[in-house]
Length: 87
Image (cartoon, rainbow, N blue to C red):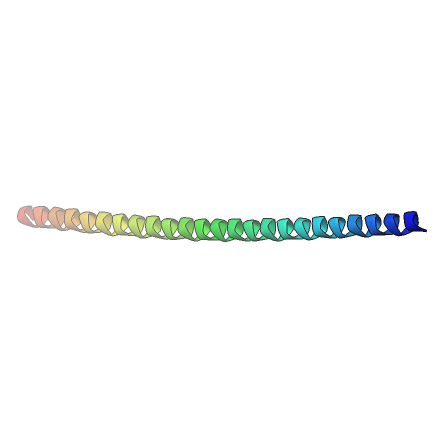
């Protein structure tokens, strides 16, 4: 009888240890999930930064196009002025 009680006690202790181990495993999984969420947020921020950089590059290209158009207009104006001197 005493042996059965001792075995039951040891079995319940093992069960408690298993439960604690499962809780630690769940806590570890939650921490991993939080780490993954932070990683995803970081990736989203990096993608937003890349989009902003791309937008900035587009703006710079547009500015270059405007400057080239201005140079083209200046050249056309000079050619017209030059031709008007001889006509």
